[in-house]
Image (cartoon, rainbow, N blue to C red):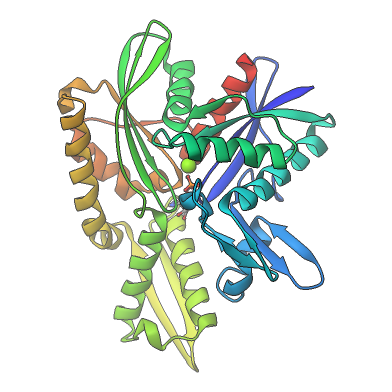
Length: 344
Ligand code: ADP
Ligand code: MG
């Protein structure tokens, strides 16, 4: 019976397992290891989880739920297919999907999982995460904090010496900073700071606004379909900058073809207001940890939005040194969960 590690994210979730002395990720959909944390209901077909549900987010907003992790531990209700579901029940559908994919891929039954949760999750949020696992048919005795998972991944790469780390986890809808001390095989979270509404979605929004400005469009004049298209183009253009200098955007609005070009310089300007907020959080966590920038040995970049060159550039300037990138930033937490599953 295998144990898997799960990064149950606000935007994307991943599964990992330990084999032959190393962590491997579980394929989710096609080539991807990421499962969008989105659940949808389709009349006559039932529930969808993942990319297919994400596609329906804007055109079928009434029957699709996303970002429900933000409300984990609350009684908030999402109405899908004529019934109400809690964040816990929706999370269970994501976990169930990961369990099924893992069983298919590994060809063995999975009964237990190590699930990562934000460091600031309270008892109720943690117990609801455990219950979600239970509904999905998984035992989840151990939950581990996301920054601890990232620190675990860091230690495998950089050794087990005593270190003070700042984990910078910039996801789709949230930014979490954690001040972490590693010593004598203990990983201790000294302070956390964050913003539950600051992430890649805000960058997409800002890029969409830029596109509208460039084309003299008013965002509220777009149809739902056009809005969905613009959001998608904005995210694609942003992500394309990982591999290319600039990205061309094109969208047909009414019968007009609108265009804009996104590059690093533009994106840096577009992100300025977000960077201002990040800097405030950075100063706050240092104050809470009673530390200074010089007290941090390494800053680890985690989360999908940490793939952005402009974010790295901003952090380099803020820190006065090179931040640490452990492979693909959106897989670091899952990787740490996989290491932990290995220890289990
Ligand atoms: P979460 O922890 O919130 O579940 P992730 O860490 O997977 O989510 O981050 C998702 C975010 O990362 C999305 O906003 C997505 O657009 C962004 N992202 C993914 N890949 C890239 C990339 N190559 N460049 C910029 N942003 C990216
Ligand atoms: Mg995450």
